[in-house]
Length: 440
Figure 1 (cartoon, rainbow, N blue to C red):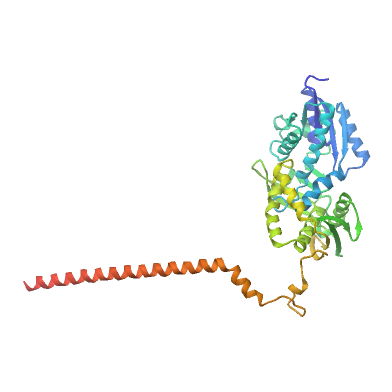
Figure 2: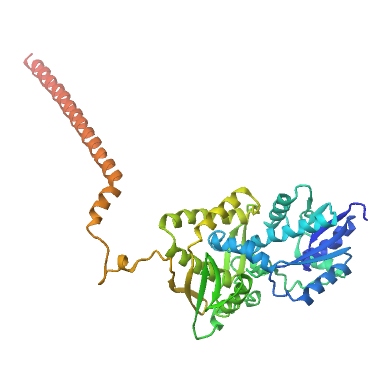
């Protein structure tokens, strides 16, 4: 046992955490690595074994891997679908969603190993440092959370690459390809390198799971998503569990060039950053889910839900997954989804995804009420009474305004008359005085 005890490291096998593993050892800790499979493209058993073997070669006293792909989809992504979770109405929260899932298992490993701390490789400029700190502490307040990258001397990715090369640490990043990548089944995030200049167009090599819209098939494709109680359950009639459906939809939608996001993002720490994301499946699911909700839910529920979706997304983005407010919002959203069952048709073509149809047994859309053609059942005679009642507060307010204006007008007229009288009297006195002076 080392002097400082055990620390569980959230390990990916990438640049930051590989350097960090050696750094923690030098600082006097026994390092236990933990990698979570969330649906990364390199999720094969052999690849996970290779990451574990790499950790052990770097000196880890134990190496854990947890396959939480289905758990991630069913416990985390499902709630995001209910909430139409999109930070700043653009980004479907792929990284922010995965952190509480990872933290859940980091804490479990730390408790099983008797560790004194959990360590992460997040920088002092990003959001993830806050997420790991808050979410691990929410699950076990006794654990210390270490973020050495915030204070060590390796302040740039180039310096990290040089450090790794000097210590014999194999990494995929190079000075020529310095992108920082985060990925899971909900999508892929790309940052750093030339992307840090918001004027630079993202190079074609930065994208991986979406084709360039110009290179997408010339033939369009329609996809029908089936939903039950707010969650997607089928593609073109073929039923699948949620994780498999998202993975399949990523390939289908991404192959038609849809799913890229290039945005200026307001980070929790106060700065703006340029972020690129690929989330073909996520964006398609949320688009279809919103359409089905419009069909199945009352307008006042939709309007209230839209406001709360913003609050939910901000809570999750800010690392507050395990918080009372977020739990309360989850309960509200879940209560709205019971009737959100039906199908939505999406049209895919060269970078676009468009809703072209929706249907549901519990649809609130009534053709007889909506049509302007034969078969119209809407009682137009009710419109006058509705408008009288609906507009009553405004009408009363307008009447009182007119009364106030009339009263103000009477007062103003009296004031003007009084002023005129005074002016006339003053003029008369002046003329009389002038005549008396002249007679002398």
